[in-house]
Length: 607
Image (spheres, rainbow, N blue to C red):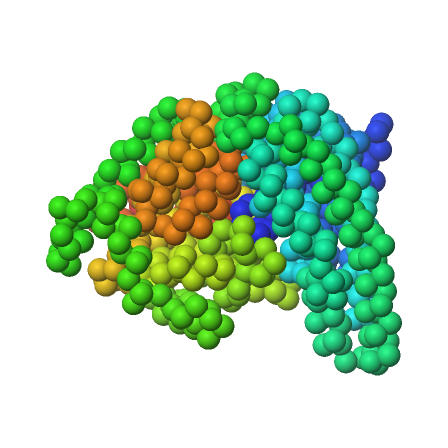
């Protein structure tokens, strides 16, 4: 099964298997008598075969067991095929349970796990369609991010594990290069403009002096903090890490660079996945997976156009109230707004440090207000950190990563400070509400802290739900009176407009066959965002088709469900209770979420 873990700037799917599986047997030969044992066994079966997710979640540490974090995930095609066979076997076991003989919450868990299986199986025929390496993700980008952000070094043994993982990346590159070969044979090659960026970034990465590379610098910083080993022992560890990077990591990157350089020669500039084999149906499958709805690309495109017009009208009303000459038109005013220097910090280290400090202040303020609209709040805190400088040029404006299960790492709101013009002061509140409180951090941390539900639900992710909630959180902060300043409110509306524009440009490229340049032009004219941000976003949609559709679709669904509950319940409606219903069952597809709200309405009306 596919399980979803927060890593980098999106909810990623990790196809993992169980270490004890073989080609002829499965870890779960028969279904456990109790269905909750089945859920746990399937979850552990998946997780135990992903050393990287074990490091991310520190799941074994939660069980009171020491665990060696010295391996990387098996990315081979043979391993993937074994996982597929295992998942079909486990699905058959799930179907064998009599749902009339289990509790209501167990039936919900069964419904959610079946949805995940069905979604995964629908995408099996397109298992080679997702780009293996891009400017945003894939091994070349994710590996240093994982080693820097997730591999903890609290002892000499942890340092040796890190070094083992430096050597272990060779096998991962071998697997990815084998997949790239198959994809090229099928005509699945990253667009030329993106290959150029991947090559530039990774050539620079592999050309650095080793001791300046993030893989070494991160290791050195963590080892230097160890108190139980001598300086001589630390120096020996540094030498070992340097040797591993020189003899294994850099050669692996250079082999991949050579393959990608050959692909660049035959790649096209077509931006959309319509160019891929059965591309239109592949895109519709991605729409279903990401939005958890049966909406078509045409419906979503038209919804986007409608929402863009509505939100731009609200922004123009604020411009008029503030004395702007609205005869200039939206596209002129929205481009003029970010040209005012008073909305920016200084373009230096001091200015960037102040941005991080002010984000922390915003989060502290909203934390003091959420008690008014939430009964349940997460115990784990959230920190603001800068996106690592080696990846910030092509990374999105911000993203969130959830806390470790053992409490050793808080939730993290990563702020991209590469282009100071991409962080206007009027947009900071909304971004903090989206990524931290009451957005991603609230939803993800609350889910992880839930009691008496299967682990797969604590760590599960459905993009429409997760991102829909975060966008809803932006609106909620406005309703709490935290966006009363006109320009802060323009910042909120610009963020919502940004998500509406996504509906247009994503379907534009992948369904209506727009070029990259057409999509950039539309987004730039209709959002007023910095060109550097627009280009990075459009290129993100090129490699993650339909992912960006989920935000607005999810937000609109949550708002519609809230309105449905308010209309049905009248004076009995309580916003805090409504938020409980949305959050305390963990993430779920939108159609199942609606069932939960309907149950809440029916139950409230009876009492």
